[in-house]
Image 1 (cartoon, rainbow, N blue to C red):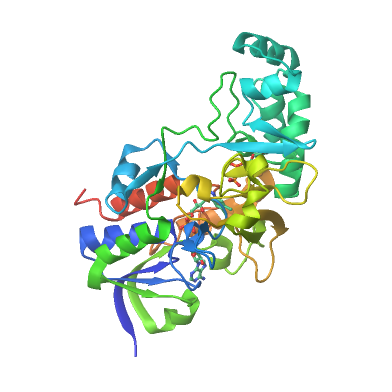
Image 2 (image 1 turned 60 degrees about the vertical axis):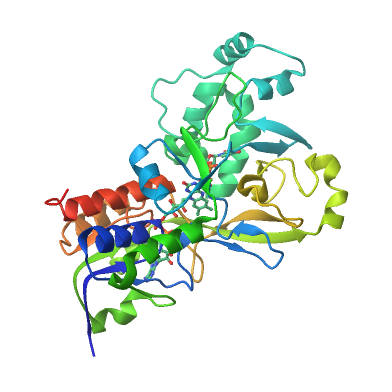
Length: 386
Ligand code: FAD
Ligand code: UDP
């Protein structure tokens, strides 16, 4: 027996589901989506845990974008819960305002200050580098060694198992540094979470496809290829895996998540620290750059706004990638880029396959960028109608 589809879509994450929704609803294409995990949503999947808390299963996913097109597109499938994503850093036995801003500077010098004084201090401490070439340079050129050592060096070494010097400037360059009191972690204009969660939003995108879309979960696409005829493939898995690692495996970082839940009674003694009834820590995320083995503790209930008496925190431990582990992060570094370029050359020659998403393009992309990439690829495949 064999199946016939216009498209086969490998992976049911943001990239795959966006592509499927456009192909089915805008172009009436018949699509088969194949996902090896037991659920849709890829790394953005969220779920209610056994304690009734809505958690981000694969680490915190803070939606943000500067693109009206992407926001409007997703808004067809979800309402939004606006959030000013706020975090803290914890080192030397205390919480620090983070990302670095005037409040952090005041903590550092132990008294009130002004933006002008902070700017003068930074001017004195920053290392003049015109075009920062790596993640160490991008931070020391803005704030100097002391703040780099306190907040960035240890975190980055843990997260990537590489020195910041051996990572692209874009990695640590993601973190804003300000001299005012704006303490939002992210820079983008629109910052919000899907009101009923990511999974609900994905379910609506899939429902819009109706009969045009068939989904197979818990299936590696390799298993069904021999039984499927299709016109084109949208591939969102790891690019090296697609080519059987013929140029060697690309480097990835993986993660281990340790969940811990608390009842209202257990939370009472945390109130002095969290400052809020029903919460374990003061903000949705606390980064641990130095003393601990984990990089951050996330209590996503702060961001989702869920009204729930219990809470769940997640400690995130960076891990080596290997058999049975997820390739959560491509590594933005010159040596990895050399290998990726070889795969990209092979991908460019595969005319019946589109490589989109974080893993298939080996890019440290946020969710909105992945949606943008999927929309652009469908425009490219069906230019006549656009
Ligand atoms: P994925 O979500 O990885 O989906 C790819 C899917 O393909 C997976 O479900 C996988 O199981 C499946 N697949 C792979 N190989 C096969 C195969 N052989 N057969 C069948 N299926 C296969 N972005 C933000 O914007 N904000 C954030 O705060 C944020 N936080 C993050 C935190 C963490 C810990 C991580 C890891 C990522 C974070 N991201 C964040 C990035 C975000 O997860 C991605 O941009 C987005 O989810 C990528 O979507 P995707 O579809 O490209 O990939
Ligand atoms: N980073 C750091 N200290 C921090 C936060 C981030 O050194 O307290 C660096 C680290 O290298 C990290 C990168 O900045 O991997 C990007 O941080 P972000 O919080 O955006 O990471 P993500 O949420 O993508 O894991």
